[in-house]
Image (cartoon, rainbow, N blue to C red; front, side, top):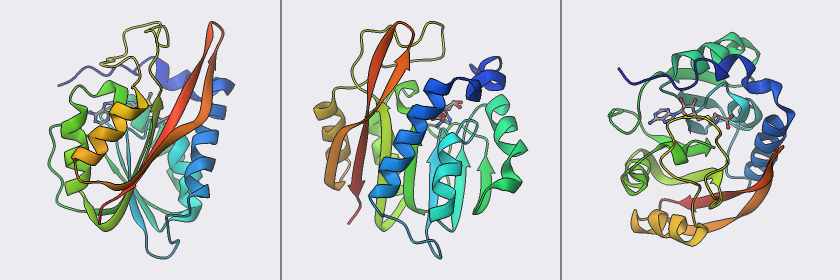
Length: 202
Ligand SMILES: C[S@@+](CC[C@H](N)C(=O)[O-])C[C@H]1O[C@@H](n2cnc3c(N)ncnc32)[C@H](O)[C@@H]1O
């Protein structure tokens, strides 16, 4: 069983205004793209954590399947499941190794992909998991100097170069790939720009 890096952090995760503001900016930028239909769309939130992004996108989709490996983060999300404004299904698994039977109309993710070692393989998996016409909306850290995390949280990448990240999406087959800064994560010791990448399977 993999280590739960978020055991301690999960309880205090939503207490930091800088974090909630950042995910709010990400959520608003995703909603602005108007990719979803409230009556039909079923999306996956990869690395859903306590559900900060899930709850923002919920009013705009029919159903969200959350995927997170961390029991402690999932416990926080489960506690607010009843207040979500869409159907919810929660999967506790490592998406890099698990195979899922279902497919989705969209995949969203916030601040998670830097925890994944093989990002190219992840993009291929996202492509396989989408229906034709399905979309990705993935937000993460722009390239940073390694100071964003002050403790060992299972990090494989100090953010990403936007062009390289977009190339990984295109390599997997995604079209209409677009990437740009949508937020800044503020820490007492620095500001960290956050990008959003969108793309379509068609
Ligand atoms: C920094 S948190 C982000 C949570 C939330 N998306 C947000 O923006 O507040 C990253 C989350 O990704 C999860 N995670 C990391 N690698 C994963 C993997 N391979 N499979 C599933 N979940 C993963 C962690 O357990 C953690 O809850």
